[in-house]
Image (cartoon, rainbow, N blue to C red; front, side, top):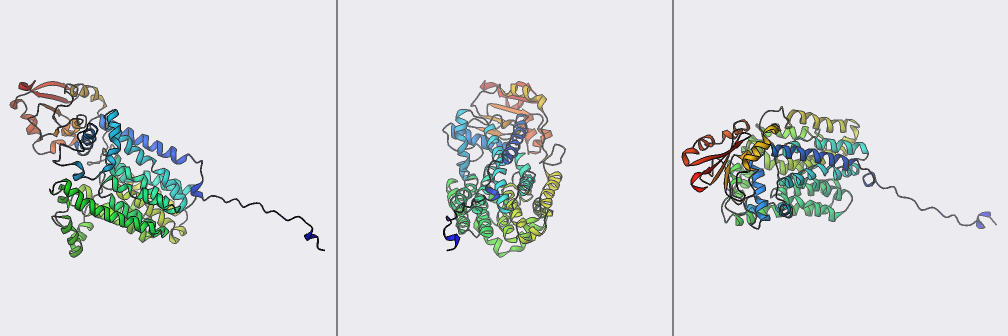
Length: 483
């Protein structure tokens, strides 16, 4: 009898499955990196606001809307005659209402924005390890994201709700990578709640999930983005405006007077907008956006196509800041472009590049950041000016003479410190209300270019205003007969 028949059966040890690289836990690097970035972004925004470099559009605008909602006045602004949702559909703003009830300050807005932009590296870190693999890929992806010109420009220009959507783009794609349909869909619809054109970001997420992972849920998400965007912009927002046309359509007036006419023009006469895309500033802005991700999306054209709808909306605008992807306008496409770059890196051609792929990604981001990111020594409206700390205390004392809650007209640089009240106006509008605050540094910040600004300021004594406070380059005036 063979000896093997008398031997006890061999018990095989159960195989231990090694979790994929993207699912390994315990690495605090992305949290440290993201937290540090969030603190730095918050500090820049807070100093910029406290030194009177923030602007009416859009910080005073958002600050007043949230304050009104927290005070029970609804989502309304002095600058539009209808509900704020008729101007921009941004339910995400409601997240700040409880915080304003505890203590009203725009610092809450900066905190939310900074956390979103900074901690977006956490899901991006995991996504890079899922799609490309290795810690080095995650470091390269997160470094390139934090160096994106679109992130720097948005963070340096007050507050905008589209910043809140950025981490959810990476989180939704992480859900697609791990086969978690619920996560893909739940995170994928968040851009819809941050702004009406977030529908195009949702569309891009769905297309990326479909292109990279063949997820049918991606097709569902893309369809939901298109349907929701059409419903909000073509039905809901016009009703909230009581049928009044939105002023944002003026940016596309060369294509048509209504959204329907614009779409028809885009299809029937492409030569009009193709010329616009190839000219300045749209053409160079598109090249800069691609260079900032090392041109890697070109290696996966179907992934690049997912970024085009949101880019196209900005680039065809007649507004030079929007078509140049300046200020906050370039941000919505940033997470999609970074994800498309990772998709290009994981492609067959991208794998052949070896170490050149991360070098292209990080190198492109660093080079474009040095050329175009807002810096203290940079030119133009994106210049990050943090000077003026020496005048803060005196200017705050002067503004303290204005009673809480009363209507006020002020320079835009000051209005962000006076916007938590029912009625606010930016000079030269609003002359005639009881209190007026003037910033003599407006000539430096560029506000003097507003038509009639200095004429309105010079007319204050003749209109019966008396100067009651002065300090830090700020003068406060009140109507003598209404003291």
